[in-house]
Amino acid sequence: MVNYYKQNLDQVFSVLSDPTRRAIIQELSKGEKTVKKLAEPFDMSLPAFSKHMKVLENAKLVSFRKVGRYKYYHLHPEAFDEATKWLNDLKSFWEGQLTSLERYLLKEEKGGNNHDHDE
Image 1 (cartoon, rainbow, N blue to C red):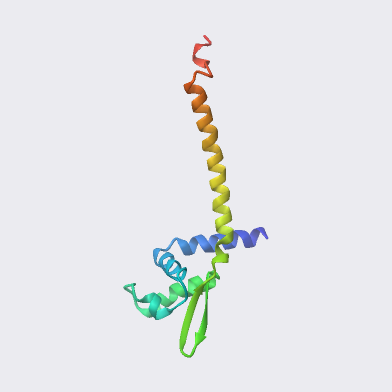
Image 2: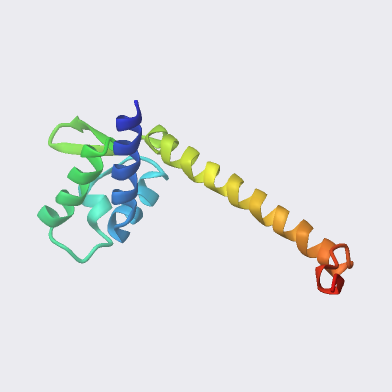
């Protein structure tokens, strides 16, 4: 389980580290599209673009259905669940840390801790 969890996180963050793949994911979040339609805004060859799609497929973030000679790609938002959980856990941790720091600083500001005057 831990191995799968780490592998899934590694794959998702590896995919998200590339701006082209992030843009593809963003576009697919609006609905399914053909490779040709997805590739239009990018200044690259269709074979180069297809490599990006293969990375997304291998990470199980997208899949396609074939209609005739066209592939219609769609996003698997549930594939991001582990990464989302991991980020939310970190967010909760840091929010708690910042809340503690804020309480401490407010206490210091109000003179609640007079260590400097103990001499």
